[in-house]
Amino acid sequence: MTLTEDMENDLFIADILSKSKTIAMVGASQNWKRPSNFVMKYLQKHGYKVIPVNPRNAGEYILGELCYSSLQDIPIKVDMVNIFRGSEYCPSITKEAIKIGVNTIWMQLGINSEAASKLGKKNGKNVIMDKCPKMEHSRLSGALGLAGFNSNLISSKRNVSNSPPLANRNGGVVRSNELETLAIHAGTRPDSAAGSRSMPIYQTTSYVFDDTDHAASLFNLQEPGNIYSRLSNPTISALEQRIAALDNGLGACCASSGHAAQLLALFPLMEPQKKIVASSKLYGGSITQFTKTFKNFSWEADLVDVSNLDAVRLAVKDPKVKVLFAESLANPDGNISDVSALAEIAHEVGIPLVIDNTMATQILCQPGKYGADLIVYSTTKFLSGHGNAIGGAVVDMGNFEWDKGRDFSKLTKPDTSYHDINFYETFGNHAFINYCHACVMRDLGTTMAPLNAYLTLIGLETLPLRMKQHMKNAEIVAKFLIAHPRVSHVSWPGFKENSYNQLAKKYFEDGFGSVFTFSLKEGYDAAVKLVESCNLISHLANVGDTKTLIVHPASTTHRQLNKEQKQKSGISDAMIRLSIGLENHKDIVEDLKGALEI
Ligand SMILES: *Cc1c(COP(=O)(O)O)cnc(C)c1O
Image 1 (cartoon, rainbow, N blue to C red):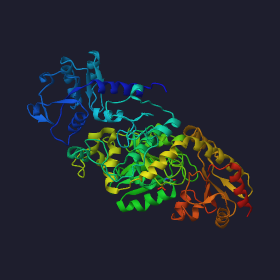
Image 2: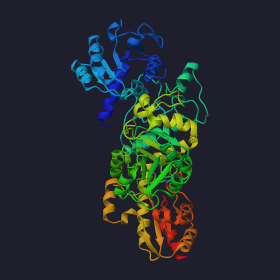
Image 3: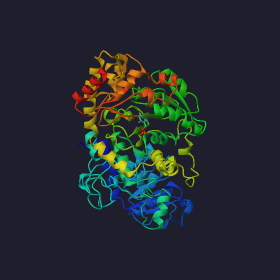
Image 4: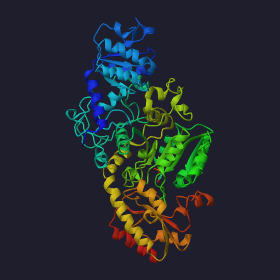
């Protein structure tokens, strides 16, 4: 584990947060709905003395502290200045801060001033820009910090105190970028109460408040914490952190199913009469959800062939389009999307790219590396991996600027269902995930069950190992099928032609998963008969299980699609879908061989 630049930054910030005792907050507001008031309250609760500075409120009290007109008026020693003013004011505030001898100049989230930074550094001060001390403090306070956020920290030690921030070996916390390590450790550490090494299943609906003030802070979103399990739950938060860590994302929000995760990803972006541009090769259930059910919200879906980049470019031109949606590796026939190209097209018109990465998993492809903004999963499949827990997740890479590009008013305008807070102004790049918990979960209630979160956490521990073996078996079975006289086609991506292999090489260095289709030379009836003649392989509608699974899409998963849609999504009557499991490959081949003889 090397000391990466990110970790250097964490250590720098943690050091500042543990050494600063007295903080002057320039631009502190008396209005409890303003971000500065949120941050002040949080910092007070965690033991800091915060002195408000604001000429409009000089001589009055904010959160019990006397407010001063300027930094020079403060009669005691100040360690750090936290600036809640526009960038243009930062140089003069920095000058004053240097005069009164502070150690750290900290410009709030959304505030950047190179001039102030230069001035501060020239005078030997620590300078931090565009960050929130409240968010950094909660993130660095330990792996069980903020609901849904990737702390980037792992630990085998109990979290005995929530502060001061822990970001170094002595604090019992380390960091890794290795998927095998993250799959086992990210998001969980021995539980602080009992030392349980396995993540407890927090089977509870609600959480006690310390007092009324604590309750109010939680409801106001001033303080991160749990209120009611429809919104957040510690077992689910642990899973959110682990899934986000595997994508190297900012955070994640889990949902009751993959379909719920799709709703969750789209809801903060969409409004009535707005449009989704999506791949015509999506999973059959998603096509029905997008084109039929979402119509009830007056959302329109425009399905395009995403391998035709000009068609995508044309489709997203319509200003009503709010999002571009595709699968990295399509279910079932293994088409690979050119994620970088799609991201560029989406970003040109100011909309986010959402990638369904269910079939690939983070082990084969991390769409965030190629510019995807949001990544959705049906955790039901490979992530949980044992066919025993329905679930879904949305990962936010944290890079999309919601106040630029097309209008995303749910995130950038005052929210009337939340005492008029503006999520993007208050939470910066944490806005999307906070909105998911605070509004989508609150009002749509698509919450994952804690037991399912636990099962998925356990499943994830072996994801890197499982994916390797799934793919080894899949290759052997695909090669057996392509050589069989009754088989006309096998969609295993390893057999596809050259132009396709360029994409495969870029996005799928290590392999293509274990879900593919094959077609018989005969028709519908022969396909049905083959599926029914398997004895080891299970006939059911799922993928990504340890068990090998088989299904006939035309009569099951894609049954609701009309002829044209079936054709567009590449489903034919004689096509059969396989999800190759982890049994010995000889037994899988033997079962198919027997069924092909009947
Ligand atoms: C299964 C699946 C979904 C839907 O997930 P559920 O957990 O079944 O709701 C979405 N996308 C893909 C690619 C899937 O395979």
